[in-house]
Image 1 (cartoon, rainbow, N blue to C red):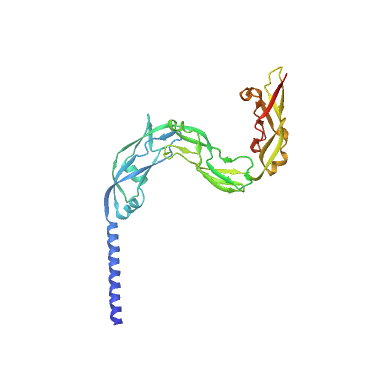
Image 2: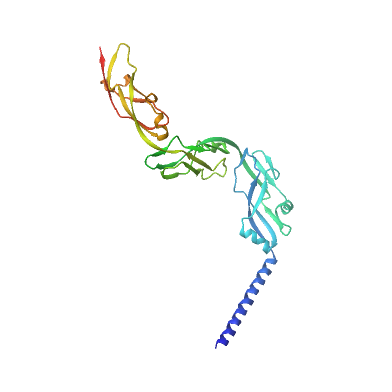
Length: 313
């Protein structure tokens, strides 16, 4: 019984082997024959002058070719295209670039010897163009960054580069005043920041070029603490002939500062003033305002909200 089964299996294997060989022979026979067909070739534009922008990107060529089956395979597995060099293949006329090449020229430059080019449609291509505008615009960081309690950036975020150059049609570029980054999300930060962030470029920007598509974001992160100082109050814009007596003479100013800068902060770095012209509803009350404070401090606030005064006769 086992012998009969073995013989049957061998017969089946031999059958499938001959079937596969027959299929391979059929494929090679088909591929060795010549076929004629018309396919759409897209246009790849190279060496376009920087001062010009091509406005009609949808231009394509219908090309009829005759070649062997195996040559056709590459057109089915990859998008066929014709390369047009704007330095040598086109002529500039009025407001368009004109391309007109013979079948023989295309055969010799962009097709192999075993490909016969039978027809081109259209025979002439025109590319409308506009004058480019070059504009430098700032980059704006779009971020959602939170810090571990007691930590913050010591100075400010550094963007490299902090601006990008936009090149494109004047009518489009004029409306671009800044480029925003994609959202940078970081949570519980306690170390220095060094991140690469993509730019949020216009979605339909085929006619625009940008000097960068991403930037680097840097920031020094330090341990912060709160400080308070008693700062003298100064009254300004008091009319001549009027003498004031006011209380309190100094107010408490609270601020947030890095540990490295904590000992560098002093009272002389702050200036608190009250403007007599801003007296509240002609009452004997003034609002203290912080006129001067160090750049290295954050979240500065005056704890005293009102200054009382009386006019001395």
